[in-house]
Figure 1 (cartoon, rainbow, N blue to C red):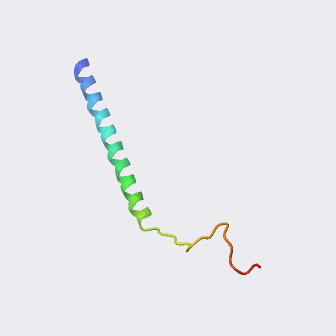
Figure 2 (figure 1 turned 45 degrees about the vertical axis):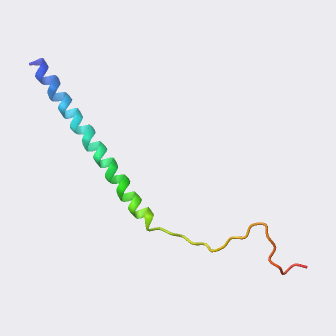
Figure 3 (figure 1 turned 60 degrees about the vertical axis):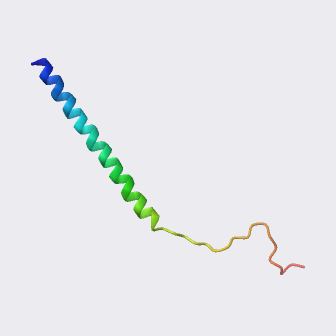
Length: 55
C-alpha cells in the first residue's frame, strides 16, 4: 500500500509541475505578443549638439 501511495504522490506532483510549466509558457507567449505590437518613436534625438541658432 505504501508503494502505490508514493507512486500516486509522484504522479500528482508531476502533473502539478507540468501545469505550472505550461502556464508559464502561455504567460510568456501572451506577453511577447502584446509587447511586440508596441512601438514608440520619439524621432531623432540630438544630445550635446548645437542647433545652429547660437552665435
